[in-house]
Image (cartoon, rainbow, N blue to C red):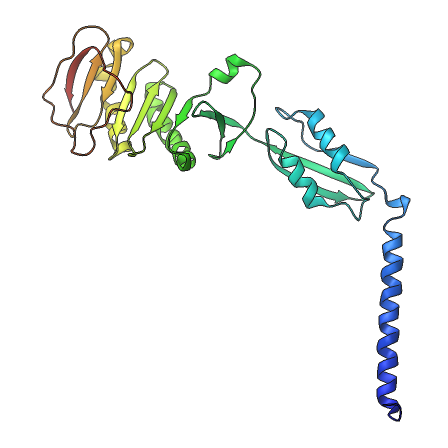
Length: 269
């Protein structure tokens, strides 16, 4: 090789290029760690509603390492998203030598199985609502663990259909056999079963003004699983039976549990 000048020139140029890269890397490594690039400001761009500001400050104090160039933004975002009520965090660099933090908070929609919370997107999250009165205003959801998103979407559909009745929902439940029940704020329990759930509810809402509106405070339970009508259980009196047709086979499930006392009245639709 030593008697081949062309190859020697190529090798020397390669070594020179590599040395130059190492020098530049070392210089850059030194420069980005100069005190001049230390972070001067961390700006929180959203005003926290439920997020505890002290917890955010604690995360920044413990996890904010490095300067404007070397700070690990992904790591910092992950730590911020572990703070209660924080759904998503976005951290970005902003010249001169600042970080800007944007937080998206969970918006509590309902309590799930009385142990945790569901947000507007149908996601579970852990948090505490200190005001008991505010906490109790949220509806309760129940169902299999994997059904959180489905129950949330059905809640919105139920609410939409119930708008003409001017009634809000206090409880939505989905059984392991996929039977639905909805309890309204006035105490009325609607048993929707497993089939044609939305059409059954829409049918009930359509006839409600002419059937139950006048006695709504006395209605305890409404069985909507009949093909041509529904059965009503009134508070007080004895259990009766009706002739509006049998509930569809395989759709006869009572999620409420226990006996329902009252008088059964049948309404054809």
